[in-house]
Length: 490
Image 1 (cartoon, helix red, strand yellow):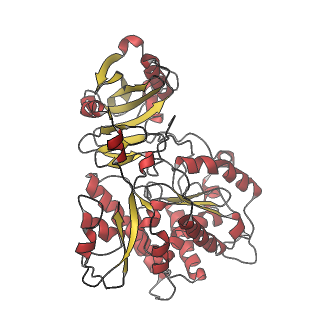
Image 2: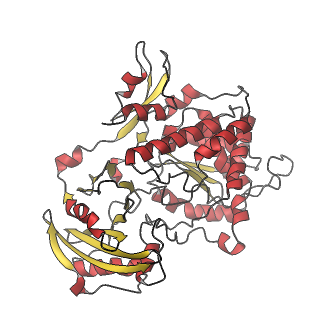
Image 3: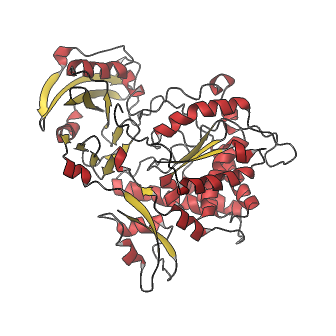
């Protein structure tokens, strides 16, 4: 954003692991014929790296990031690429989305949220190995044409699920709506390539001396987390972040277990891993705004609003998406010089790539909780019927405005009225009350149970379910004194 960029969200943003644009080993796993990552890939990756890190909320620094980097470099060596330890760059991203991916030049990324979901070092090595494998197996090179390989940075394209927009100028809004500010080219691997990356990742685990079953266990945790998030948001059909660019993790668990076999050999380094990741920020970072149920609150921007019932929000680098069955919306900002009509006009023009605008006469003015506001609406024809598009803007200062863009089936845009009316400023006390959640690793004491530890989770609902998924435990789990487990606290 103009002053305080919103964090990037992985689910609607970048194809996880789908940007690994090729290392060049002649034969994966053959120590005799390995090659290094090409100079061109290194140049492309170095160019894209700063923007991508910024899009995902920045890089986590400090001992936790150093630990993740060391595990990633160690597993990269198992790929057979020469100079892998020096050529691969492993970054821990400050994102609350469960995701991992790679880009050209050996740049591998994992979010702090996905690391927090893991339960041992072998799982971390397995996920990072999967991403390294996409580079080592040249998957992106096999998916891309020579012409498109040179354009890592490009238009994200339409990700407007549920509404198939037509070719009219107004309908081209779909190419801009809900883009989360990303300018990264969306590519997808085939299911076979994802399976191959899983299998290579398991091979790397074995070579490094880890328990190869870790790939299966982390996929199971991810599937369980996706199911829990769908339950909590009431969105059974919600596409999880990882699954938006990887095959459904639930469908990969059995295959990964079969590949790993029944061997009980290999290390997990569970206690070391848990000790090293304790203290990670969990969920939204208050510096970038937080989603709390149906409420979005940004203590730095001093604002808050409420999403409609039945909707869920995803906080992004430059916007917040509001998603539901009957419509979608995005909250963002733009350049503002005190002219609300011109501001709304620029938003519409950007949505239609300059092919259509709104006249000042069509802009309505109002006041929302003391904020000067204005809005305009337009109707677009789509392949599945007419839709209404609304831009609703608020002036927070003479040089700062924010706005919603919303889309809904024709005549049903009123479902966003309460959200539009909920926007308000917050004071210093309310902003100061927003606290970060942290991942805390504790040692189970005699007499403590799953229930007693779950009651310490920093949530007002579903504490037990969250605790079980976070720790990869089943409903019948029993804890032993001296065991390390994760909880989420303020």
